[in-house]
Image 1 (cartoon, one colour):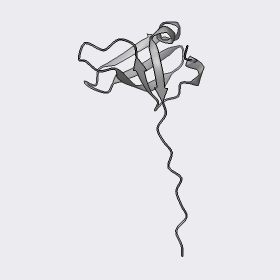
Image 2 (cartoon, rainbow, N blue to C red):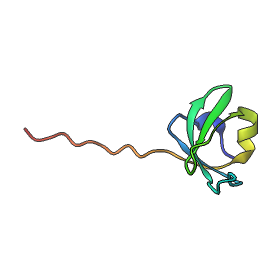
Image 3 (cartoon, rainbow, N blue to C red):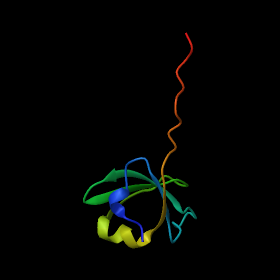
Length: 73
């Protein structure tokens, strides 16, 4: 089971069931009492209570933070 406390804005979550548009991936926009999600396929926005999203998340993908190398002067 995925820990919802690990969710941060900017994460992409894969849900167990597809959205009616066919997309599985959602971007996390808001984390609080409710979780704000935007479908990556069609752009639909939903607010879901924390307790409900816990059962529906299959995986969490974090955006990669590429380390920036300092420029040589």
